[in-house]
Length: 185
Ligand SMILES: [Zn+2]
Image (cartoon, rainbow, N blue to C red; front, side):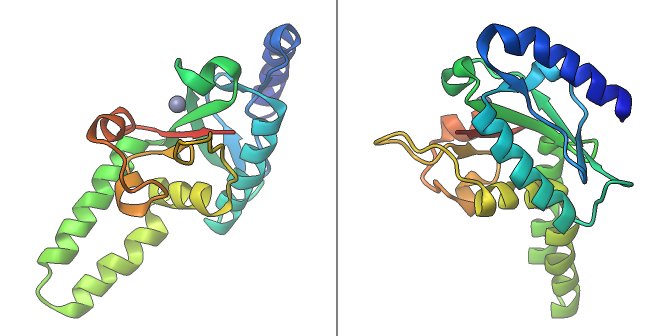
């Protein structure tokens, strides 16, 4: 953990001094497990990510002795070019696409369950245990993300159509975010 932090700050000064960007920071209850270069962001976005990710991690039961891992990958288009966006690809060592598959499976099993108690067990446990969904909801509930004039709030992921904020997301945009969560500020 310590070693990671040192690596982060080393990379940070290398990249950051050139364009004013900083690595998405680790918190106390969560750790950024991806290389610093995967999420070089503005100070403003770094602060927002730290605030929201920390709250997510604590609410999900993690702490400084048992932090949850967050993995970013670099983005290319739009806000990414200015360091104003970040893409989360994994949480707790599991890909966002796998969390989504797990979520869909649980929904299917709940729909097929013949007795209400079984259905309740599924519908009550999955929102607690599914870290991908929890992360998406925490970003949605607690984050203040960019909303350029005439555009939707810049939070997209595999749950956007069912959970919002932009339920009218196009098929193309939804497919482009079926394995990660994109936020911009
Ligand atoms: Zn993105």
